[in-house]
Length: 234
Length: 240
Ligand SMILES: Nc1ncnc2c1ncn2[C@@H]1O[C@H](COP(=O)(O)OP(=O)(O)OP(=O)(O)O)[C@@H](O)[C@H]1O
Ligand SMILES: [Mg+2]
Image 1 (cartoon, rainbow over the protein chains, first blue to last red):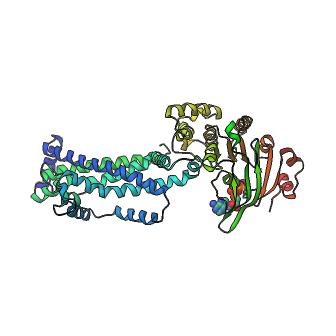
Image 2: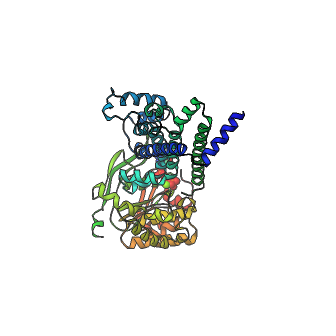
Image 3: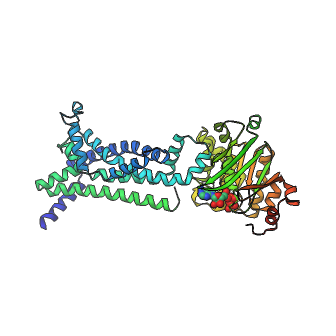
Protein backbone atom coordinates (compact mmCIF):
# COMPACT_ATOMS: atom_id res chain seq x y z
CA UNK A 1 0.00 0.00 0.00
CA UNK A 2 2.77 2.37 0.95
CA UNK A 3 4.70 1.65 -2.19
CA UNK A 4 1.59 2.26 -4.24
CA UNK A 5 1.04 5.64 -2.56
CA UNK A 6 4.66 6.50 -3.05
CA UNK A 7 4.32 5.50 -6.69
CA UNK A 8 1.27 7.66 -7.10
CA UNK A 9 3.05 10.59 -5.47
CA UNK A 10 6.04 10.15 -7.75
CA UNK A 11 3.68 9.88 -10.71
CA UNK A 12 2.01 13.18 -9.88
CA UNK A 13 5.44 14.73 -9.54
CA UNK A 14 6.40 13.45 -13.01
CA UNK A 15 3.26 14.95 -14.49
CA UNK A 16 3.56 18.29 -12.70
CA UNK A 17 7.24 18.73 -13.50
CA UNK A 18 6.64 17.71 -17.12
CA UNK A 19 9.15 14.90 -17.04
CA UNK A 20 10.85 14.76 -20.47
CA UNK A 21 10.25 11.03 -20.96
CA UNK A 22 6.61 11.38 -20.07
CA UNK A 23 6.17 14.37 -22.34
CA UNK A 24 7.91 12.64 -25.23
CA UNK A 25 5.76 9.53 -24.93
CA UNK A 26 2.56 11.53 -24.56
CA UNK A 27 3.32 13.60 -27.62
CA UNK A 28 4.11 10.51 -29.68
CA UNK A 29 0.86 8.95 -28.58
CA UNK A 30 -1.06 12.01 -29.61
CA UNK A 31 0.79 12.28 -32.89
CA UNK A 32 0.12 8.69 -33.87
CA UNK A 33 -3.51 8.70 -32.79
CA UNK A 34 -4.39 12.11 -34.16
CA UNK A 35 -2.85 11.24 -37.53
CA UNK A 36 -4.71 7.93 -37.63
CA UNK A 37 -8.03 9.42 -36.56
CA UNK A 38 -7.81 12.28 -39.06
CA UNK A 39 -7.16 9.84 -41.90
CA UNK A 40 -9.84 7.46 -40.62
CA UNK A 41 -12.31 10.36 -40.53
CA UNK A 42 -11.48 11.30 -44.11
CA UNK A 43 -12.21 7.74 -45.18
CA UNK A 44 -14.96 6.81 -42.74
CA UNK A 45 -17.19 9.86 -42.85
CA UNK A 46 -17.74 10.01 -46.62
CA UNK A 47 -18.00 6.21 -46.65
CA UNK A 48 -20.73 6.26 -44.01
CA UNK A 49 -22.69 8.98 -45.82
CA UNK A 50 -22.19 7.26 -49.15
CA UNK A 51 -23.61 4.03 -47.72
CA UNK A 52 -26.65 5.96 -46.57
CA UNK A 53 -27.25 7.41 -50.01
CA UNK A 54 -26.42 4.56 -52.33
CA UNK A 55 -28.61 1.60 -53.10
CA UNK A 56 -26.73 -1.44 -54.29
CA UNK A 57 -27.17 -5.14 -53.97
CA UNK A 58 -24.66 -5.76 -51.22
CA UNK A 59 -25.46 -2.69 -49.17
CA UNK A 60 -27.02 -4.50 -46.23
CA UNK A 61 -24.15 -6.93 -46.17
CA UNK A 62 -21.62 -4.11 -46.33
CA UNK A 63 -23.26 -2.33 -43.42
CA UNK A 64 -23.35 -5.57 -41.41
CA UNK A 65 -19.68 -6.20 -42.15
CA UNK A 66 -18.84 -2.66 -41.12
CA UNK A 67 -20.68 -3.09 -37.84
CA UNK A 68 -18.87 -6.34 -37.24
CA UNK A 69 -15.52 -4.69 -37.99
CA UNK A 70 -16.27 -2.21 -35.20
CA UNK A 71 -15.59 -5.02 -32.80
CA UNK A 72 -12.42 -6.18 -34.54
CA UNK A 73 -9.98 -7.51 -31.91
CA UNK A 74 -6.96 -5.16 -32.09
CA UNK A 75 -4.53 -7.99 -31.42
CA UNK A 76 -5.69 -9.70 -34.57
CA UNK A 77 -5.34 -6.46 -36.53
CA UNK A 78 -1.79 -6.23 -35.22
CA UNK A 79 -1.06 -9.81 -36.13
CA UNK A 80 -2.35 -9.52 -39.67
CA UNK A 81 -0.53 -6.25 -40.25
CA UNK A 82 2.63 -7.76 -38.81
CA UNK A 83 2.47 -10.58 -41.32
CA UNK A 84 1.80 -8.16 -44.18
CA UNK A 85 4.56 -5.74 -43.21
CA UNK A 86 7.24 -8.17 -42.12
CA UNK A 87 10.31 -8.68 -44.31
CA UNK A 88 8.86 -11.77 -45.94
CA UNK A 89 5.41 -10.31 -46.30
CA UNK A 90 3.92 -8.67 -49.42
CA UNK A 91 4.64 -5.14 -48.15
CA UNK A 92 7.98 -6.01 -46.61
CA UNK A 93 9.90 -3.87 -49.08
CA UNK A 94 8.31 -0.77 -47.61
CA UNK A 95 10.23 -1.45 -44.41
CA UNK A 96 7.41 -0.15 -42.24
CA UNK A 97 7.43 -2.66 -39.41
CA UNK A 98 8.34 -1.12 -36.03
CA UNK A 99 7.79 2.43 -37.24
CA UNK A 100 5.18 4.96 -36.12
CA UNK A 101 3.72 4.67 -39.63
CA UNK A 102 2.89 1.03 -38.99
CA UNK A 103 1.15 2.06 -35.78
CA UNK A 104 -0.81 4.71 -37.62
CA UNK A 105 -1.92 2.13 -40.19
CA UNK A 106 -3.01 -0.25 -37.44
CA UNK A 107 -5.09 2.43 -35.77
CA UNK A 108 -6.62 3.48 -39.08
CA UNK A 109 -7.78 -0.09 -39.57
CA UNK A 110 -9.30 -0.13 -36.10
CA UNK A 111 -10.88 3.35 -36.16
CA UNK A 112 -12.24 3.61 -39.70
CA UNK A 113 -15.05 1.05 -39.22
CA UNK A 114 -16.08 2.79 -36.00
CA UNK A 115 -16.26 6.19 -37.64
CA UNK A 116 -17.93 4.87 -40.79
CA UNK A 117 -20.51 2.85 -38.91
CA UNK A 118 -21.45 5.62 -36.48
CA UNK A 119 -21.54 8.06 -39.37
CA UNK A 120 -23.81 5.72 -41.30
CA UNK A 121 -26.26 5.59 -38.40
CA UNK A 122 -26.26 9.35 -37.92
CA UNK A 123 -26.62 10.24 -41.59
CA UNK A 124 -29.33 7.65 -42.08
CA UNK A 125 -31.52 9.38 -39.51
CA UNK A 126 -30.86 12.71 -41.13
CA UNK A 127 -31.52 11.38 -44.62
CA UNK A 128 -34.86 10.04 -43.47
CA UNK A 129 -35.69 13.61 -42.49
CA UNK A 130 -34.19 15.32 -45.53
CA UNK A 131 -34.69 13.08 -48.50
CA UNK A 132 -37.86 14.60 -49.91
CA UNK A 133 -36.36 18.05 -49.66
CA UNK A 134 -32.98 17.21 -51.16
CA UNK A 135 -34.50 15.19 -53.98
CA UNK A 136 -36.98 17.97 -54.67
CA UNK A 137 -34.10 20.42 -54.89
CA UNK A 138 -32.37 18.34 -57.51
CA UNK A 139 -29.18 18.03 -55.49
CA UNK A 140 -26.31 15.95 -56.77
CA UNK A 141 -25.12 12.99 -54.77
CA UNK A 142 -21.98 14.82 -53.74
CA UNK A 143 -24.07 17.76 -52.49
CA UNK A 144 -26.22 15.37 -50.50
CA UNK A 145 -23.18 13.78 -48.89
CA UNK A 146 -21.77 17.17 -47.96
CA UNK A 147 -25.12 18.35 -46.61
CA UNK A 148 -25.60 15.26 -44.46
CA UNK A 149 -22.06 15.48 -43.13
CA UNK A 150 -22.37 19.17 -42.34
CA UNK A 151 -25.82 19.09 -40.77
CA UNK A 152 -24.90 15.99 -38.81
CA UNK A 153 -21.64 17.45 -37.64
CA UNK A 154 -22.37 17.09 -33.91
CA UNK A 155 -23.08 13.40 -34.16
CA UNK A 156 -20.14 12.95 -36.50
CA UNK A 157 -17.75 14.74 -34.18
CA UNK A 158 -18.97 12.37 -31.50
CA UNK A 159 -18.20 9.47 -33.82
CA UNK A 160 -14.69 10.75 -34.43
CA UNK A 161 -14.09 11.32 -30.73
CA UNK A 162 -15.30 7.81 -30.01
CA UNK A 163 -12.76 6.56 -32.52
CA UNK A 164 -10.09 8.68 -30.88
CA UNK A 165 -10.94 7.25 -27.49
CA UNK A 166 -10.64 3.73 -28.82
CA UNK A 167 -7.32 4.45 -30.53
CA UNK A 168 -5.55 6.31 -27.76
CA UNK A 169 -6.22 3.54 -25.26
CA UNK A 170 -5.44 0.71 -27.64
CA UNK A 171 -2.39 -1.42 -26.89
CA UNK A 172 -2.58 -4.81 -28.63
CA UNK A 173 -2.12 -3.84 -32.25
CA UNK A 174 0.44 -1.09 -31.85
CA UNK A 175 2.50 -3.19 -29.49
CA UNK A 176 2.85 -5.83 -32.18
CA UNK A 177 3.51 -3.62 -35.20
CA UNK A 178 5.29 -0.83 -33.31
CA UNK A 179 7.47 -2.96 -31.11
CA UNK A 180 7.50 -0.46 -28.23
CA UNK A 181 10.97 0.82 -29.12
CA UNK A 182 12.23 3.53 -26.79
CA UNK A 183 12.29 6.99 -28.44
CA UNK A 184 10.81 5.54 -31.63
CA UNK A 185 7.53 3.73 -31.18
CA UNK A 186 6.90 3.88 -27.46
CA UNK A 187 3.51 5.40 -26.68
CA UNK A 188 1.39 5.77 -23.55
CA UNK A 189 -0.22 2.36 -23.53
CA UNK A 190 2.80 0.33 -24.57
CA UNK A 191 4.98 2.20 -22.10
CA UNK A 192 2.59 1.44 -19.27
CA UNK A 193 2.62 -2.21 -20.16
CA UNK A 194 6.41 -2.21 -20.18
CA UNK A 195 6.93 -0.19 -16.97
CA UNK A 196 4.48 -2.38 -15.08
CA UNK A 197 6.44 -5.37 -16.26
CA UNK A 198 9.63 -3.73 -15.01
CA UNK A 199 7.99 -2.84 -11.71
CA UNK A 200 8.39 0.93 -12.22
CA UNK A 201 5.00 1.97 -11.00
CA UNK A 202 5.79 5.67 -10.82
CA UNK A 203 6.19 6.19 -14.55
CA UNK A 204 3.41 3.72 -15.34
CA UNK A 205 1.01 5.53 -13.05
CA UNK A 206 2.09 8.91 -14.38
CA UNK A 207 1.40 7.77 -17.92
CA UNK A 208 -1.85 6.27 -16.71
CA UNK A 209 -2.88 9.60 -15.24
CA UNK A 210 -2.26 11.29 -18.56
CA UNK A 211 -4.27 8.61 -20.33
CA UNK A 212 -7.15 8.97 -17.89
CA UNK A 213 -7.12 12.73 -18.27
CA UNK A 214 -7.33 12.37 -22.06
CA UNK A 215 -10.20 9.88 -21.78
CA UNK A 216 -12.11 12.11 -19.40
CA UNK A 217 -11.63 15.09 -21.69
CA UNK A 218 -12.95 13.15 -24.68
CA UNK A 219 -15.98 11.93 -22.80
CA UNK A 220 -16.76 15.39 -21.51
CA UNK A 221 -16.64 16.65 -25.07
CA UNK A 222 -18.93 13.86 -26.29
CA UNK A 223 -21.32 14.52 -23.43
CA UNK A 224 -21.57 18.24 -24.09
CA UNK A 225 -21.98 17.60 -27.81
CA UNK A 226 -24.90 15.25 -27.30
CA UNK A 227 -26.47 17.67 -24.84
CA UNK A 228 -26.40 20.62 -27.22
CA UNK A 229 -27.74 18.32 -29.92
CA UNK A 230 -30.74 17.46 -27.79
CA UNK A 231 -31.41 21.10 -26.98
CA UNK A 232 -31.76 21.76 -30.67
CA UNK A 233 -28.76 24.02 -31.02
CA UNK A 234 -26.52 22.89 -33.78
CA UNK B 1 -40.10 34.10 -68.46
CA UNK B 2 -39.44 33.03 -72.01
CA UNK B 3 -37.97 29.64 -71.06
CA UNK B 4 -40.74 29.10 -68.53
CA UNK B 5 -43.27 28.67 -71.28
CA UNK B 6 -41.44 25.69 -72.61
CA UNK B 7 -42.20 23.72 -69.41
CA UNK B 8 -45.90 23.55 -70.20
CA UNK B 9 -48.22 21.98 -71.02
CA UNK B 10 -47.84 19.09 -68.63
CA UNK B 11 -49.90 16.14 -69.73
CA UNK B 12 -51.08 13.20 -67.64
CA UNK B 13 -52.06 10.27 -69.76
CA UNK B 14 -53.94 7.48 -67.96
CA UNK B 15 -51.76 7.88 -64.90
CA UNK B 16 -52.27 5.74 -61.81
CA UNK B 17 -50.32 5.66 -58.56
CA UNK B 18 -50.37 2.58 -56.38
CA UNK B 19 -49.30 1.86 -52.83
CA UNK B 20 -48.81 -1.86 -52.55
CA UNK B 21 -51.90 -3.27 -54.27
CA UNK B 22 -54.20 -0.28 -53.77
CA UNK B 23 -54.60 2.45 -56.28
CA UNK B 24 -54.41 5.71 -54.36
CA UNK B 25 -54.63 7.97 -57.38
CA UNK B 26 -55.98 7.70 -60.89
CA UNK B 27 -56.55 6.90 -63.58
CA UNK B 28 -55.88 10.54 -64.37
CA UNK B 29 -56.21 12.21 -67.74
CA UNK B 30 -55.58 15.89 -67.52
CA UNK B 31 -53.35 18.65 -68.81
CA UNK B 32 -52.29 21.96 -67.36
CA UNK B 33 -51.26 25.10 -69.17
CA UNK B 34 -48.73 27.72 -68.21
CA UNK B 35 -50.58 30.30 -66.19
CA UNK B 36 -52.58 30.65 -63.04
CA UNK B 37 -53.16 29.02 -59.72
CA UNK B 38 -54.79 25.63 -59.45
CA UNK B 39 -56.18 24.75 -56.05
CA UNK B 40 -56.57 21.11 -55.06
CA UNK B 41 -59.42 20.36 -52.73
CA UNK B 42 -60.81 17.18 -51.29
CA UNK B 43 -61.18 15.33 -48.01
CA UNK B 44 -58.26 13.86 -46.02
CA UNK B 45 -56.67 10.98 -47.85
CA UNK B 46 -58.22 12.00 -51.16
CA UNK B 47 -54.82 12.07 -52.87
CA UNK B 48 -53.93 15.77 -52.98
CA UNK B 49 -50.42 15.34 -51.63
CA UNK B 50 -49.84 12.34 -53.87
CA UNK B 51 -51.01 14.35 -56.86
CA UNK B 52 -48.63 17.22 -56.14
CA UNK B 53 -45.73 14.83 -55.59
CA UNK B 54 -46.61 13.04 -58.81
CA UNK B 55 -46.40 16.27 -60.80
CA UNK B 56 -43.07 17.09 -59.17
CA UNK B 57 -41.63 13.66 -59.91
CA UNK B 58 -41.32 12.56 -56.28
CA UNK B 59 -43.86 9.81 -56.83
CA UNK B 60 -43.66 7.53 -59.83
CA UNK B 61 -46.83 6.31 -61.47
CA UNK B 62 -47.18 2.58 -61.96
CA UNK B 63 -49.32 3.16 -65.02
CA UNK B 64 -49.23 5.97 -67.53
CA UNK B 65 -46.89 8.91 -67.76
CA UNK B 66 -46.54 12.46 -66.58
CA UNK B 67 -45.03 14.35 -69.47
CA UNK B 68 -43.65 17.83 -69.10
CA UNK B 69 -42.70 19.70 -72.22
CA UNK B 70 -39.05 19.46 -71.24
CA UNK B 71 -36.92 16.50 -70.17
CA UNK B 72 -36.98 15.74 -66.42
CA UNK B 73 -33.53 17.09 -65.62
CA UNK B 74 -34.56 20.53 -66.85
CA UNK B 75 -38.05 20.34 -65.47
CA UNK B 76 -37.69 19.61 -61.78
CA UNK B 77 -34.87 22.06 -61.22
CA UNK B 78 -37.26 24.86 -62.09
CA UNK B 79 -39.86 23.77 -59.59
CA UNK B 80 -40.14 24.23 -55.84
CA UNK B 81 -42.13 22.18 -53.40
CA UNK B 82 -43.40 23.19 -49.97
CA UNK B 83 -44.20 20.02 -48.06
CA UNK B 84 -47.25 19.52 -45.89
CA UNK B 85 -44.95 19.06 -42.91
CA UNK B 86 -42.18 21.62 -43.34
CA UNK B 87 -38.73 20.07 -43.53
CA UNK B 88 -36.21 22.18 -41.70
CA UNK B 89 -32.54 21.54 -42.02
CA UNK B 90 -30.24 21.60 -39.02
CA UNK B 91 -28.94 25.06 -39.70
CA UNK B 92 -29.94 28.61 -38.96
CA UNK B 93 -33.09 29.99 -40.52
CA UNK B 94 -30.95 32.14 -42.79
CA UNK B 95 -28.85 29.21 -43.99
CA UNK B 96 -31.97 27.12 -44.54
CA UNK B 97 -33.35 29.74 -46.86
CA UNK B 98 -30.04 30.30 -48.63
CA UNK B 99 -29.54 26.57 -49.17
CA UNK B 100 -31.17 26.21 -52.62
CA UNK B 101 -28.98 29.01 -53.92
CA UNK B 102 -25.84 27.41 -52.52
CA UNK B 103 -26.87 24.16 -54.23
CA UNK B 104 -27.08 26.10 -57.47
CA UNK B 105 -23.55 27.35 -57.03
CA UNK B 106 -24.05 30.74 -55.41
CA UNK B 107 -21.44 31.90 -52.91
CA UNK B 108 -22.22 31.85 -49.23
CA UNK B 109 -22.29 35.66 -48.94
CA UNK B 110 -24.53 36.14 -51.92
CA UNK B 111 -26.85 33.36 -50.74
CA UNK B 112 -27.21 34.89 -47.31
CA UNK B 113 -27.82 38.33 -48.73
CA UNK B 114 -30.68 37.10 -50.87
CA UNK B 115 -31.98 35.01 -47.98
CA UNK B 116 -32.20 38.16 -45.89
CA UNK B 117 -34.53 39.73 -48.44
CA UNK B 118 -36.87 36.76 -48.23
CA UNK B 119 -36.58 36.65 -44.45
CA UNK B 120 -37.99 40.17 -44.41
CA UNK B 121 -40.65 39.35 -46.92
CA UNK B 122 -42.06 36.39 -44.96
CA UNK B 123 -41.51 38.08 -41.61
CA UNK B 124 -38.83 35.95 -40.02
CA UNK B 125 -36.33 38.69 -39.19
CA UNK B 126 -36.65 38.09 -35.45
CA UNK B 127 -35.45 34.49 -35.79
CA UNK B 128 -33.13 34.84 -38.79
CA UNK B 129 -30.04 33.66 -36.93
CA UNK B 130 -31.69 31.12 -34.70
CA UNK B 131 -31.33 27.42 -35.32
CA UNK B 132 -34.28 26.37 -37.41
CA UNK B 133 -35.02 23.47 -35.05
CA UNK B 134 -36.27 25.76 -32.32
CA UNK B 135 -38.67 27.99 -34.26
CA UNK B 136 -42.44 27.56 -34.11
CA UNK B 137 -44.63 25.57 -36.49
CA UNK B 138 -45.88 28.66 -38.29
CA UNK B 139 -42.36 30.03 -38.57
CA UNK B 140 -41.28 26.75 -40.09
CA UNK B 141 -43.93 27.10 -42.76
CA UNK B 142 -42.78 30.61 -43.56
CA UNK B 143 -39.21 29.33 -43.75
CA UNK B 144 -40.26 26.59 -46.17
CA UNK B 145 -42.10 29.10 -48.34
CA UNK B 146 -39.17 31.51 -48.44
CA UNK B 147 -36.80 28.66 -49.27
CA UNK B 148 -39.09 27.61 -52.10
CA UNK B 149 -39.41 31.09 -53.54
CA UNK B 150 -35.79 32.18 -53.34
CA UNK B 151 -34.95 30.34 -56.57
CA UNK B 152 -37.74 32.16 -58.46
CA UNK B 153 -39.27 28.87 -59.59
CA UNK B 154 -41.41 28.55 -62.68
CA UNK B 155 -43.68 26.13 -60.87
CA UNK B 156 -44.51 26.21 -57.19
CA UNK B 157 -46.20 23.34 -55.36
CA UNK B 158 -47.74 24.26 -52.02
CA UNK B 159 -49.13 21.50 -49.83
CA UNK B 160 -51.36 23.21 -47.27
CA UNK B 161 -48.91 26.06 -46.69
CA UNK B 162 -50.97 27.95 -44.15
CA UNK B 163 -52.37 25.27 -41.83
CA UNK B 164 -50.32 26.53 -38.89
CA UNK B 165 -50.53 30.23 -39.62
CA UNK B 166 -52.48 32.87 -37.76
CA UNK B 167 -54.90 35.16 -39.61
CA UNK B 168 -52.45 37.95 -40.28
CA UNK B 169 -49.69 35.61 -41.44
CA UNK B 170 -52.11 33.77 -43.70
CA UNK B 171 -53.04 37.07 -45.34
CA UNK B 172 -49.37 37.95 -45.81
CA UNK B 173 -48.59 34.57 -47.30
CA UNK B 174 -51.58 34.71 -49.62
CA UNK B 175 -50.50 38.13 -50.82
CA UNK B 176 -47.08 36.68 -51.51
CA UNK B 177 -48.58 33.79 -53.47
CA UNK B 178 -50.77 36.15 -55.47
CA UNK B 179 -47.72 38.22 -56.30
CA UNK B 180 -45.74 35.28 -57.63
CA UNK B 181 -48.72 34.11 -59.67
CA UNK B 182 -48.95 37.60 -61.17
CA UNK B 183 -45.27 37.40 -62.00
CA UNK B 184 -45.89 34.26 -64.01
CA UNK B 185 -45.15 31.43 -61.59
CA UNK B 186 -47.48 28.48 -62.04
CA UNK B 187 -48.89 27.52 -58.64
CA UNK B 188 -50.48 24.26 -57.52
CA UNK B 189 -51.87 24.52 -54.02
CA UNK B 190 -53.63 22.02 -51.80
CA UNK B 191 -55.78 23.44 -49.05
CA UNK B 192 -58.71 22.68 -46.80
CA UNK B 193 -59.47 26.37 -46.38
CA UNK B 194 -62.46 27.20 -48.59
CA UNK B 195 -61.91 30.94 -48.17
CA UNK B 196 -58.30 30.59 -49.23
CA UNK B 197 -59.30 28.53 -52.25
CA UNK B 198 -61.75 31.24 -53.31
CA UNK B 199 -59.18 33.97 -52.83
CA UNK B 200 -56.32 32.29 -54.69
CA UNK B 201 -57.70 29.86 -57.22
CA UNK B 202 -58.07 30.42 -60.91
CA UNK B 203 -59.39 26.92 -61.14
CA UNK B 204 -60.21 24.15 -58.73
CA UNK B 205 -59.34 20.50 -58.87
CA UNK B 206 -61.66 18.49 -56.69
CA UNK B 207 -60.21 15.10 -55.79
CA UNK B 208 -62.03 12.29 -54.06
CA UNK B 209 -60.83 8.73 -53.53
CA UNK B 210 -57.91 9.37 -55.88
CA UNK B 211 -60.07 10.51 -58.77
CA UNK B 212 -60.55 13.96 -60.19
CA UNK B 213 -64.25 14.61 -59.85
CA UNK B 214 -64.17 18.21 -60.99
CA UNK B 215 -61.80 20.56 -62.75
CA UNK B 216 -63.53 23.89 -63.00
CA UNK B 217 -63.12 27.63 -62.85
CA UNK B 218 -63.09 28.85 -59.28
CA UNK B 219 -66.45 30.63 -59.32
CA UNK B 220 -68.14 27.87 -61.25
CA UNK B 221 -66.97 25.29 -58.71
CA UNK B 222 -68.19 27.22 -55.71
CA UNK B 223 -71.45 28.44 -57.26
CA UNK B 224 -72.47 25.37 -59.20
CA UNK B 225 -70.58 22.26 -58.07
CA UNK B 226 -71.35 19.56 -60.60
CA UNK B 227 -71.07 16.44 -58.45
CA UNK B 228 -72.97 15.48 -55.32
CA UNK B 229 -69.62 14.78 -53.62
CA UNK B 230 -68.42 18.33 -54.22
CA UNK B 231 -71.73 19.74 -53.06
CA UNK B 232 -71.63 17.91 -49.75
CA UNK B 233 -67.89 18.68 -49.39
CA UNK B 234 -68.66 22.37 -49.71
CA UNK B 235 -71.50 22.05 -47.23
CA UNK B 236 -69.03 20.50 -44.81
CA UNK B 237 -70.65 17.08 -44.74
CA UNK B 238 -68.63 13.97 -44.10
CA UNK B 239 -67.72 12.25 -47.34
CA UNK B 240 -67.52 8.50 -47.56
N1 LIG C 1 -46.26 6.09 -48.46
C1 LIG C 1 -47.53 5.63 -48.45
N2 LIG C 1 -47.77 4.36 -48.16
C2 LIG C 1 -49.03 3.88 -48.15
N3 LIG C 1 -50.10 4.63 -48.41
C3 LIG C 1 -49.92 5.93 -48.70
C4 LIG C 1 -48.62 6.49 -48.72
N4 LIG C 1 -48.74 7.80 -49.04
C5 LIG C 1 -50.04 8.01 -49.19
N5 LIG C 1 -50.77 6.90 -48.99
C6 LIG C 1 -52.23 6.78 -49.09
O1 LIG C 1 -52.65 7.43 -50.25
C7 LIG C 1 -53.86 8.11 -50.02
C8 LIG C 1 -53.73 9.56 -50.45
O2 LIG C 1 -52.85 10.21 -49.55
P1 LIG C 1 -52.53 11.76 -49.69
O3 LIG C 1 -51.45 12.07 -48.69
O4 LIG C 1 -52.24 12.07 -51.10
O5 LIG C 1 -53.89 12.44 -49.22
P2 LIG C 1 -54.22 14.00 -49.06
O6 LIG C 1 -55.35 14.30 -49.97
O7 LIG C 1 -53.01 14.81 -49.18
O8 LIG C 1 -54.77 14.02 -47.56
P3 LIG C 1 -54.62 15.18 -46.45
O9 LIG C 1 -55.70 16.16 -46.71
O10 LIG C 1 -54.86 14.44 -45.17
O11 LIG C 1 -53.27 15.73 -46.55
C9 LIG C 1 -54.20 7.94 -48.57
O12 LIG C 1 -55.18 6.96 -48.44
C10 LIG C 1 -52.91 7.49 -47.94
O13 LIG C 1 -53.17 6.64 -46.86
MG1 LIG D 1 -51.90 15.94 -47.96
